Length: 91
Image (cartoon, helix red, strand yellow):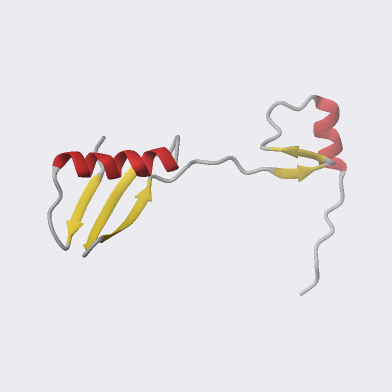
């Protein structure tokens, strides 16, 4: 892992630091940690963390179907898409 870790308000031992890393990862499975800020405040510990962005596919409703794109449509469905009317709004 190449996450950026910052500790303020004191010092942590290696095993404590690893415990906080594991805690954040366990609460957010499948996400890659980008940065972790650990603020020591007396007996309290504040964690602030940021994950790498998750890519997503845009899903649209086209001719009654939820699709990410039309690249897998057959000719008939593409013709239906081309024949539909655009109901825009007037400004």
